[in-house]
Image 1 (spheres, rainbow, N blue to C red):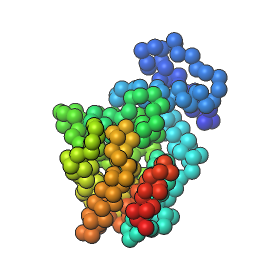
Image 2 (cartoon, rainbow, N blue to C red; image 1 turned 180 degrees about the vertical axis):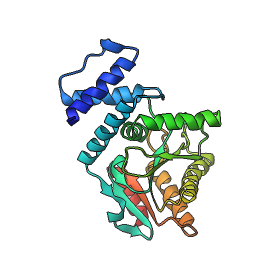
Image 3 (cartoon, rainbow, N blue to C red; image 1 turned 30 degrees about the horizontal axis):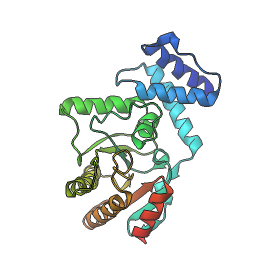
Image 4 (cartoon, helix red, strand yellow; image 1 turned 60 degrees about the vertical axis):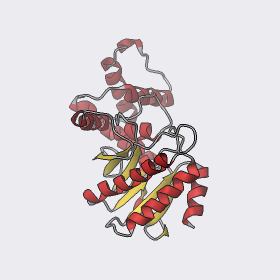
Length: 256
């Protein structure tokens, strides 16, 4: 199969599986087809799919990620001790583990083509990730609390694991509890990393997007917490992953 043929296979499967069925036409333009695929993947509830779907999906997603360009964390220069700063798409970072800023359901973002990191990670990891998260949440029997961490395989991403954490949602003025919960996110992720013998871990800017944690305060908590933890840790490399220029400048100043 060509990449276009894989795309059409996946679209046909998901459309037939959906409640709308044949009512969804496949657009002619490839970029629009890709957007439709992401929409269908975002909306799909966790559940079993055929082996044929998994095989085609996995090759398709890995090919798409390779086309974006994979960055090996080992190639990143340290800016301070074990700490690195990298601006880019975290789904293209090859390291032992990346951190996902999840919601309390831990099932990924269901909003079609939303710009959050949770959406991107679930999209490019593949449908297996949502199913794995559903199993975790079924066993837990309640929503995930802020400041905790869970771990899954990364499936089609170039990293080995995804550590999922729910950051605090800031409503109004920043509180001491918000800061304590955000600190806990970093600590629990690092503990989970050590539990799985993870040597390199990449953190996104937890809680600063849809959860409205002020960027500068969040970055300071991240750097201070991780720096202190690494004083007694087997973890060899921590990457602070930023996407926006604003966050790149904030972290660069803190790490200088």
